[in-house]
Length: 157
Image 1: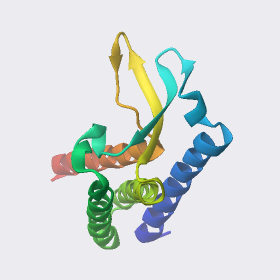
Image 2: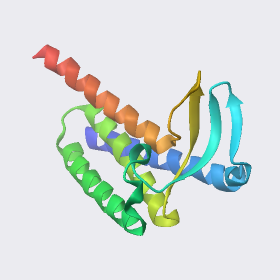
Image 3: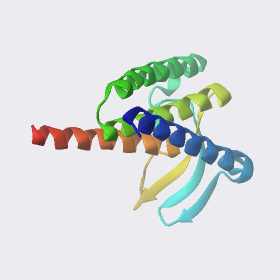
């Protein structure tokens, strides 16, 4: 399997995992009606409609934000797609696929609902992490892989 195929497989896997989890949260489990449900100490399912971008930044953009954030994300995905097509490194291709799939999943939410569906709420000892979703987690994992790959290869040169 070449790198492009591996990257595209990660993109599709990320997109399917994200959209399936959101479908389940909204239509099967009906989290909007339940609002917040404790799962484990330090972990809840909490329904949040995120109209902003990462960690609620730029939330005051109003209705135009939906279009602006979607266009910006799709432009970034396009640039990452060019990188994916050119990379000779399998881990980089897979990381880019995770990032792109997560970004497309969140853009899909913005276009469908006008906001991103967030529902994973981690908290401990009076501290609370912003509520996030599977797409956000996969984007973070992809970025972490890129950072680790860059550090590993910097040491090798």
